[in-house]
Image (cartoon, rainbow, N blue to C red; front, side, top):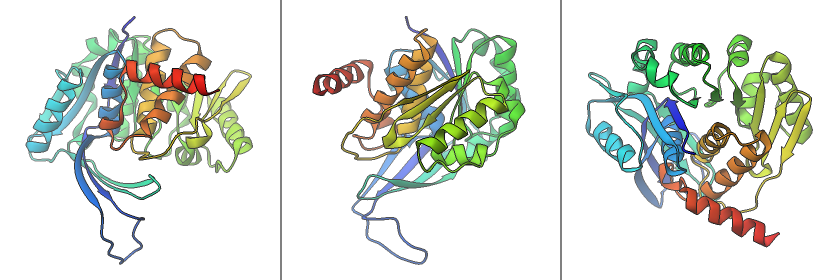
Length: 310
């Protein structure tokens, strides 16, 4: 089964610098490498969904510039349907400035550019595309009014919505209650709930808060500690997978896309989160955003190799 997943979200060109560590204010460091890497949370997720076997369609905007042309070409090469991506005059394509340290951790500054021009009217233009989807995947790198409107459109068509709640932003209980799955990482969980996820017990408290606030299903991304699945009276920890960390950029995006794909295929919640957990783990062993996204075959082989080690 190849589910149809519509990703409404951001497209960025990532300007990635490798540095021994993150510089302090006023400090100059010598980096070891610089690359232009296709990125943006929405685009990362659309590419992941396509490479894992979904019919992946993206609703988005880029600038009428060389970055926009390059990114659109790259999306098409990865199998993403780009017919619903518009070009905006007078504004640049979104960019992200990323510093990756020797431990593989990153810090990111995002300039929204054309992503900020993605409007509810753009979503309405493709109402039929959303209505025919098996799932809609969203993030917070586009205007909140567009996020909220997309959720309303999907709800009207009874299409499940997965909300990757990043980057960290506050979110109304009403919006949380209208999505099928909300999936924040640790810092995003604190922004949503006010609870700092310092350990597994705190994560469980935050997950319960989200459910009490109206969330149907909460999937907390806990980095190396795995993920926490919460729904109804169930809270289950999916343990992390030990792998050598090269770069954590886009690992959460890979996780969310794999989760959405597995859920849209009809897998159980636990199996879907487990599949996403493997996908995120494989992504951190590779450099870059979309360059770190696995194919279905690569992920299947990785899963089997981990199982064989146990």
